[in-house]
Image 1: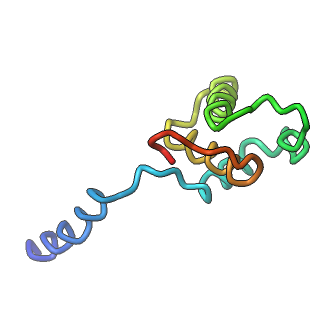
Image 2: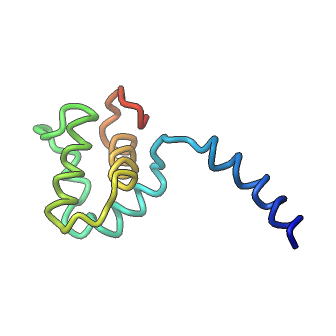
Length: 99
């Protein structure tokens, strides 16, 4: 039994150590669709006079609405949704570590 535990640790540990800090837009899409689509449709992001002018602005708006709705998402979820929105609607260059 001990050998199986050691093998499992040997397999999982490198995966944890080398996991990327990059956001997951697929997860961001799922979070956005389940939490935000009720009020936000494509027209919010497709407006000519959008409030978000860069990647950081998108992150600030996602964090703001997260707080307004109870703050259930952590930093990773905020980054995932930010990355999804940028990839899907905005295409701003990302200069942060999360990119």
